Amino acid sequence: MKPNALAMAGFDFFKDMANIATGTSRHRARSQDWRFKDKAWTENPIYQRWAQAYLAMTDAVRKNDPRGSAVRRQGARRKLVTSIVTSTLGSHEYAARKSSRPC
Image (cartoon, rainbow, N blue to C red; front, top):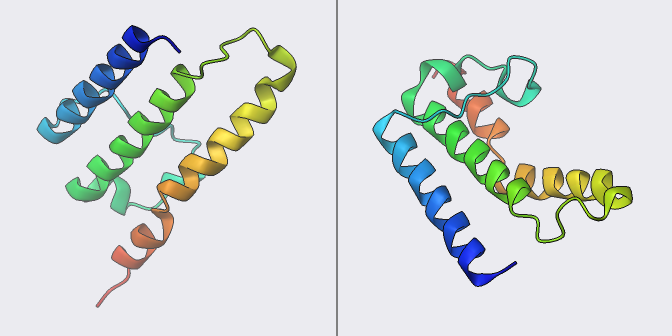
């Protein structure tokens, strides 16, 4: 990845994070996404922003794959690895389950 492209990607990511912080983010979990089925992800503003930050991070990683679409055979493998890494970094399912339990 070229330095200018990397700098722009970083700028776009931080712009997304600022939008999340101000509540104007375009990132929304798809209704089919099992990771965000718990109501805490939509009812709790902190968890909602946490989910948006996770989605922004995964988008940034996917968009800025330095190999691009030139290596089509490895596309599915890269997508799987990206999904595993970002899901591990955003291990949020436990927190959401814990938050939805009564005290």
